Length: 64
Image 1: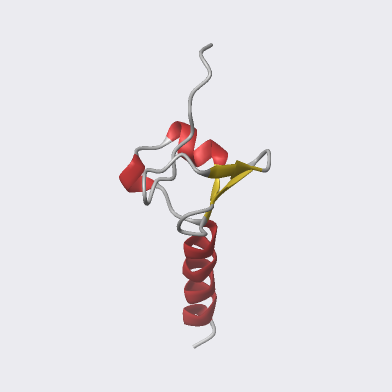
Image 2 (image 1 turned 90 degrees about the vertical axis):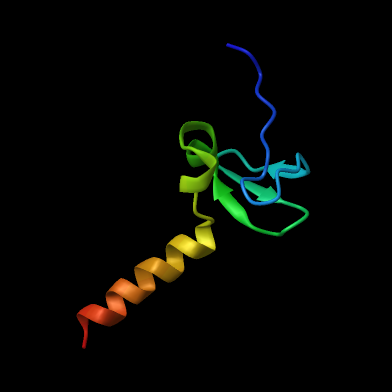
């Protein structure tokens, strides 16, 4: 298997820090699950903060 350069799905830069399961872009300061970056199309990938906001909105809608 070839080593694949991981790029940030938002800004397409390769300035990322690899934390194992998570990568962090040093340019836009967003964190992504590495499995999403490697397996999904770029337009399908959500940053971890976006996933958390989505889950929070669902939780808030269920309590109303």
